[in-house]
Length: 280
Image (cartoon, rainbow, N blue to C red):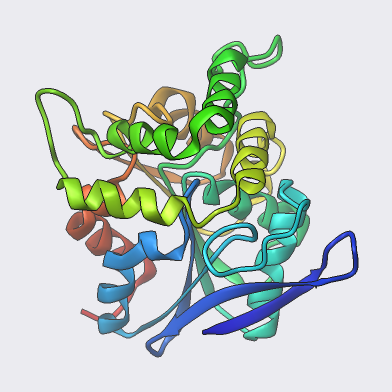
């Protein structure tokens, strides 16, 4: 295992981020979604380095093999963690790819750190621009939905996660696009996160407003989202977010759920490689 040092926690202990680094070429940095870790990018980590790009992925603090501090799960800190990855690996001409919660890190990094080192960005099933329903965001999701998630995590985290991954991957009584072992594997990944990190990140991705971050993005930007996403509905997210980024494009995947990094892996990999401009 290899680690990036991302500052210290409130007690002065170092925060270290576990990462992987594959291939050669202009770098692509993958920022995973909640409540998973870098392992969720398995199908991208296996394919993208075959096409002349360098692929870096890391575990968010509190998840996977990274440090698990008590605090630091706000998007300013998480964007600073991303900056530590780019700086310490001295990455240039980067394409940032943020999935789900990871799209928030991309948006906040681009505004907070002025897009340093970044040439392109991709938002996949991302939580941007603002999920929470408020007087100023009437098209958002009611707070009770997120309160229910936090309550479920506190009551029975393994049970909650086992149910959460079903709509995540589009599983219903009429459709089973992934195997039961895939569902079980994703629950096992999610359980490597701490209860504290899992809960605090719900608060972060539900209540953080990225509507001022997105217009600061001045590089080519692509949104990819499934129109059957029940976890982060298309109308609450990408269809609104794409209008806030100058020149951005949206690819809508028909009948695809939130977890299209698995269910539409071949199409996603091809679209990423085309947007990156990688070798065939």
